[in-house]
Image (cartoon, rainbow, N blue to C red):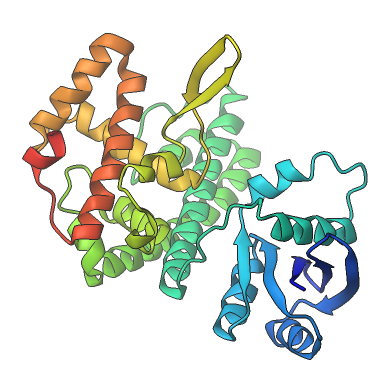
Length: 342
């Protein structure tokens, strides 16, 4: 008889549940959240497992890769799909989650997700750290502006290099504000230094990656956008069609149809938000800046802008960029303005 297993991954221990083809629970255990421990338990069990499922998460990709390498029939499940399937469960627990995942494996009612390669995960880690430092840098600057504004001191428009000098100029003669500004400006200086180091590392990585250099032939696509897209796509062959790339990253409209109701809503915003943001920023630059090599693509988007507004035009262009860039990766060809506009 066929057997199926579900794993609910936690930091220290994971709950494992094994069911048969009829849905009967055969065994439930707690196993350490380590690849070696999970692999050893499944190897020592007497069950001929058809599928093993675990929900995508911080530890899941690490466990999935190790178990897959050892030949186990493991599947990585989409978190959003699993969450929706478990909404009817009155009691939320690790044990019940493992039971639910095992039943999803038995029924085949699941959507597998791609486990990124190690290089893609390393690139994503670099981009995440860079974005974190950048956001904290903006928080420090905005906090300084807010603190001084309470005392009627307006920073106004300034540049990145002149910001510290402007703050020091405003707090001169205010000992209390000087102490606060000195501390926050020191933190800002450290963040700027580390952010510059991340920027340098990202640009170096972009230059050394052939796929990233290929995408950078697209107008408005720089090192950060290209690295974000390459690390998210990872393997272009996992998409049967380039048109799926736009929907995969939440750039296609929602659809609700029931009886006489047929409603098309805004974009779904599912999938990787960083890819969606990067593509939207690239589309914004194409539509607002004078760039060479994209006149036909820009004209196509401007026709949408005149009909539906600039915001929808940027989203539509971002979706088209997702499709174009996937095709470039799949075919290993640089940007072609004539083909992109077709």
